[in-house]
Length: 253
Length: 217
Length: 57
Image 1 (cartoon, each protein chain N blue to C red):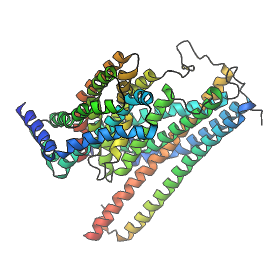
Image 2: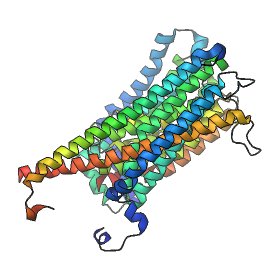
Image 3: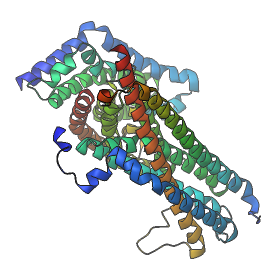
Image 4: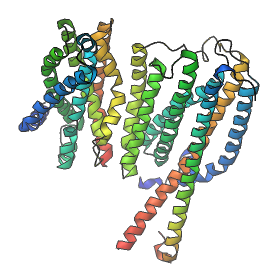
């Protein structure tokens, strides 16, 4: 580890150094925020004023415009955490720890919102808020895994140690999620089949796809902006802890 | 191999030394199952139809209870650090622990399951299926439990967090476990359960060893 | 506002809940950032006067 300072570093090592990372990513924050806000405005306008009723679902199709992006994020955020966990375990990179920790609460909220909007869509469509079908059940289990990871982060005092242990658990969860999905599907198959991404192209009319994709990108960008901001905060928090430790040592010396 | 056997012997002797623990666990398993009729009523047909689920829930809870003693005492008296530097690889030591854990927590549950079957008005055919499903599925529960225990061992009060972590991972075990008793495709469910157990038992020692090692350096 | 049909209440609640969640998340992120920045500034201010040339590191 000590020869890292003398060896010339690759560009990706330089930009991934926590201090450097804050320096180059902080100016990105405002433009990305602006873009997110514009996309949300456009997406909301399209979803309320410029999209037709679905011939089957009627106006409740509008719930899909917030449900689908949240459901996508619930899985995307976990994938991101799993990649960060690899970064923690393989390269022992402090930035990967920070990314993992910052993503967990965001993922938990998006998963909860996906369940919430799903329930509100299910009531008028299926006549029940909660149906123990494959997708809702595995999303619920995913929420429990997120909450478990958050509880684990809060239980550790030493964050460096926590990162490695939680990375192991995150990867175990990542292996297990497909198994959970399979078992839950086996257990109950009632949900309608996937209809957006199919090999033969989308089956929804374009007028519904426009707001859907806008909201999709808006929510994904929102996650990226919040994740970036939370990572900056986490880096600062670690600096605070280091300084506090130094002060305590100085006081005792 | 002799080191592995010695490790297994040590674990078994430690677990059985008190003697009371194993009996307490069996008692817990039976009592959890026996308390359900007080909640749902003594209707025989209802009880018979939900009995497989009750037996599995009781087994799941009983296995969670026994987890504390998997790594915690060794962590507290420092022998976990010795195990890390022993000649026997840590993953092999954990395999021995896992086998011992299964022998002292899951095997007693299998022995106690006839009592629950009787109390919950199970017929003989579904009792045999329950026995098979429990013996196929409990290794997976023990393996997931070992991962959860290894992850929470550095936490001072990790006892409450481990079940929260383990329960979502154990969902497939419960689904296929109950499926192997009640579902029309019980054969397929039993095979899935066996596959899950084999995979979990094969991987868990390495994952748990990795978690313990990365927590301590 | 357009007519949302017979299930308007569900649509409104869905958007309202999502807005609440998202704004709550944004607010929490910003508050956390501000509190941490303030703590860091306070610590660095405390450290600065104690700093002598040879003990900067």
